[in-house]
Image 1: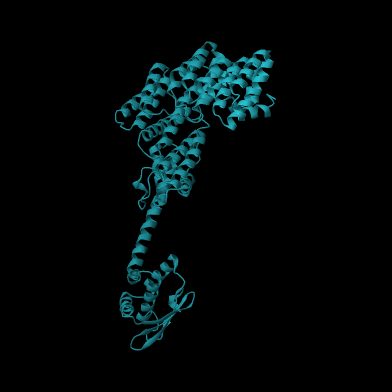
Image 2: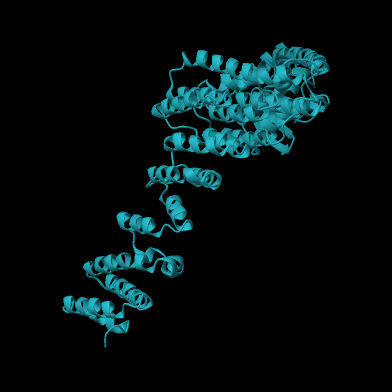
Length: 537
């Protein structure tokens, strides 16, 4: 029978290796001539690993080859083993399997090259491991550049891997395996720099990939970057203590330089580095910081700004400069920079909200109120969670600085309509029912959008406010002139009846309702719904 089971790559490699070990170049060349002349006959598989065939030579010879043990295979020719007839059969078998015959013809040369490459790789790997060991011994006193040199050596073996979660695990595993024990702060900083290094590599597709033609991350690379980002953010939850590791400061400043450069470089992972840059100041502030550090960072940011052409990068640079002025207590310059940034693009809300958090934790309520006033209009209130947090900071500030409340309402009004829910909640929580009702009427809200229980507090505190709300909605529902509109109108009329009774204005209700029924007497469907609602008989 003809070969039916496909030969996998491992079996193919074994065949090439077997050809190189058991056949000379001349024998292979003569076997190739026999194969090309079609002298191989009756090629068949006698088992999973055994080939049988006949080859026309001086006479017809029988060939039996065990693919897993070519040394014990044979031919009925005078040579008996490793002959040109066997070579011809192996070439014919490879051809029938859809494999190219040239690797078999050049098997001896290829095998020699492979052995030479293997020796070279072995020597390289030995040198690499020795170098890693030398660098690891210096980690305690080395700077970040030495750390990154070690990261590079640790991850070289994975350079051609697809950039996915497995790539991240292998790289970090190799790096951390070589890491010696370090004090807490240095250990955290070492891990952070390892994460940053691997994140950079995720944006660099392997040389054999077409993905580097694109400026965005592929799905699995993006997934790996997101997982790595979450792990990196967790590192910032605990800060090192400068009293324990005074030698840590130079490494922190080197890391800051790295984060700044990556934040201001166009890259698919730039936004991650921007997050880390601002989070990193939580590590530095206030224990590792002083006025000189802020001024130096401001100088570096201003120098970098002159070379930025992309709007998102300019925005990040301006926001970073604003933060330095915040640390220097120069709020007016900080606000001016943020206003300039907002004119160039959308502000990164988290970076601004973090400053609010700092002021809240410091209980600097007047300054917090000032920042909320100046920067609130610059925030994109359509971003998830931004209106809620902005409102929470205002509520905290007003509790301690009551005179700032008028400014709070002014700022919250500027968030409309994007943050109307937050504005409404603040009005309701403070019992500003007239303002709340004015907002409902101006926005054309419907009373039936709210459950009756949601309006109970208003009905209790300021029931008269509900009268225009209900009356206007009743008229709108009737104008729809359909059954659903009439049903909604009747539902509200029943609420109005109870409300007038609660206000002890039954006579006024009777006058209104009589006029209403008379005015719409020709609307039979409405009259039917009024009867079903037991408002008329």
